[in-house]
Length: 93
Length: 416
Image (cartoon, rainbow over the protein chains, first blue to last red):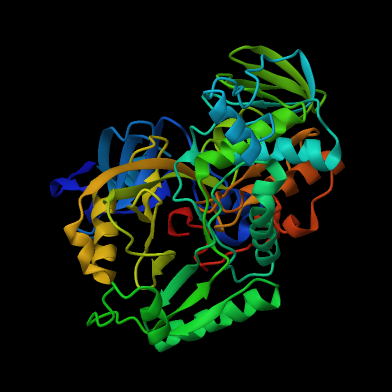
């Protein structure tokens, strides 16, 4: 599996480390109910199919990336810098 | 047909003509008391112990493909009970005791071979940690011996004891650990369950879980609706997908784990050995191939195959411990899909939906647990109360904070 890093180009997946599903959003600190925090920390959709997930290019540019990948085939449909994804989400609010 | 020396000799004289199928090729009936989803080791063991221990024989095991096609036939066949936490030790020790009596119990040669499991240590701190683990095991009734360097050398002279970075200082040995022929476990439990009246139904994929008034009434399958008073999910790797059919989200991610077999060679290593400074473990099969593996690939996957980066990592671990491995050719490798739970420990519990039971989250340690998981899951299903040895494996422990985190990694499934 190769991941096309927006800064470094296509690189072997061994250069990256994996955090997991990019969907969970951390609830607002002390205001969060325990049930919300439980959901954020522990529960996952774990889809068989397309998933958006966070990878870190540890042995490269050290950027966080959002990779869209099919868990049934490992085919990667898209890669974006996590920073850009977060900025776009904030702008859309 | 009961298997014995007499039956083997008798069949030999009759030209092997009269062997009968090991289990019936059952078709689904309209309704059962219990439907077990998943015809792997755990599901078949659950059905067997439901019939044997609790007298519940109106049971079906539904398998999407064929018996033994999933993780029960993809693991590296190791059995052991060398755990360190209170919630785990009694359970895995029960499992090891059940393994010791399994072949007589189910009248099937599963090649249970207690050749020993040896965990190597490479530093003083690691020796202390293993001494503590060994003591915890012995207090709980399991066996453990702390070996020094010469003790290890007597068992495995072939490894590199003087690696500059990770010299072998000794090991923790569980002599009662070893290997079991994994296919025979699936076949043996299928035959034994069938013999007690259980329907083992292959090529029957569950596509939905039907509920009425918050109660499970049966499952939709590729071969029509099958009614059930109780439905038991035992589908490690696909637990999230099945649970989603009942509207549940689980504290589980599916990950791929790879395993490897070398070409066959003369006996090199007697038992199972693990490298303590990286993730690498190895044993030798009766055919002579070295069977080995290491870490999961580390990303969500349902693909049943992994990537080269992990293969390289496993080989590096192997070469650091045993440079001679570099002379062997790799014969084949494969992958299986693991239910990686959020604390590295399994779940055997009710689900909050009446009549729906869950056995899941086995990470990459499900094979050794097969007999006890079946035994305890059957107890839960039959009596609606957890078996004492599996009482810690609750689904709600993630919400209440009663985690069983053997490795101390936190809620990061790819690190367990």
